[in-house]
Image 1: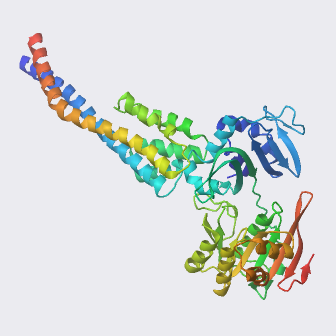
Image 2 (image 1 turned 180 degrees about the vertical axis):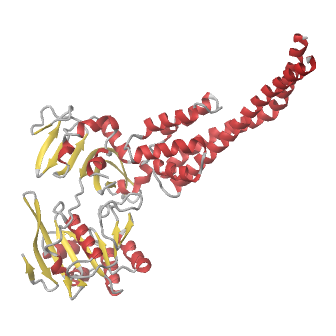
Image 3 (image 1 turned 120 degrees about the horizontal axis):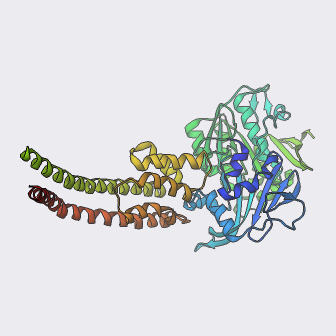
Length: 323
Length: 170
C-alpha cells in the first residue's frame, strides 16, 4: 500500500480531504503533531508548517486548524480501529505503530497502578505521528565496514532520537538477508517490539526486510531474541533501541550461541553509551564495560540539516575506521 | 370440483400458518447464529486481543450466512478502503439484516453494536459484549417459549380459518 494511503488511514473519513495537500509531499513529511486546542503542525524537511481548516498549508499559525477534543478523540478511535483494548500495552508505553511502521506517540492523562507504574493513558490529548521512511540502499556505503571475511560483525548503531537509526537498521537487515558484495545472504531474525522496523500488520512486514528475514512482531526484545534463536536459528539477530540489562543479557546469549547481533541505541558517543547504561539503577557495574566489548562495530549517526549521515565508525577497541 | 376447491383453500390456509411457524424457526436460527458470532467475537477479544475489524474478518472466513457476508465487506472496506468502522457497520449490517425475519429490537441490538466498543481494557470490553450476549440470550429464551406455545395454535388457527373460509364460500 502507498505511504499516502497509510497516513490517510490514520484520520477519519471526513478529515481525509484536509490532508491531501500535506500528503502531496509525503516523502518529505517527517512528523505530524496534533494537540487539543493547538494548531496542527507539520514537520517537513526540517521546517514547521501549519495546516488550515481548508486543507492549505501555511508558515504562520494564524488561521491554522485548532483541533477540538472531539476531533482528537475521533482520530484516536480510528487509529485503534475502535478497539483500544487491543492496543492497551502499546498505549501504556506511550505509542503505537500503525500499518507501514509509522509510530504514533501519545500523551494525556496517565493512570497509575498500585505500584506507581503507568497503567494506561486515558484522555489522550496529544499525538505525534512520526512518518516511517524506507530508504532502500541507505546502508550501501557502510556495509563494507560491517563484514570481516564474509562474516557479519556485531554492530551497534548509536544516535540521538530522529537521526535515522531505524531507517539505516532496516536497510542493513535487508542487505544482510539478501546478500551483498561482502557476504552471502543470511537468515536474519528481527525482534520488532514496537513494530517499527518491519512495520508489521497482522504479522506481515510492510517494509522490505529481505528474503531471508523472519520477524517476531510486538515481542519484548529480551524474550524475543531467545525465542528466535531457539526456534528459527538466525545467523543475525536485529533489534531496535536496546538499553536495559535484560536486553544486554539476551544479546550475550545470542552471541554465545554463535549468532551475530545488529542493534540500535540512543546516545551520541561511546561515553554516552556506557554512561547511559551506568545510570540505569538496575545495571550492575560490569554491564557498561561489557557493552563496550560486546560489539565489533559502533556506528554513530548525526543529522545535518535534513540529512542523516554516519558520523563515524569505531571498532571494538575504539579505533576510528571511518569518519 | 367444489371438493377440490375446498381442499385447496384449507391447504392454502395451512400453508400460510406453516410459513408463520417457519418464520419463527428462522428467526430462532438467526438469533442462535448471532449468539455464536458474539461469543466468538468475545473469544477473539479476550484471548487473541484482536481488534474488532480483524475478528470480523476471521469470522467471515470461517462461517457463511448473511452476517458473514457483511463482515467480509466491513473488513475489506476498513483495511482496503480505510473507511471508519461505525458508519460501515451500520451500512453493511442494514443491507444484510433488513430482509431477515428479525424483530425491530433484535435488529437494533445488531445496529447498536459499535456503541458497546471503545473500552481500554479487554475485560471491560468483554463485559460490554457479555451484556449484548445476555440480551440476545433473553430474546432466544422468549422466542423458544413463544415457539412452543404458538406453533400448535397457529397451525390450528390456520386449519380452522381454512374451514371457515370454505363454509363462507359455500
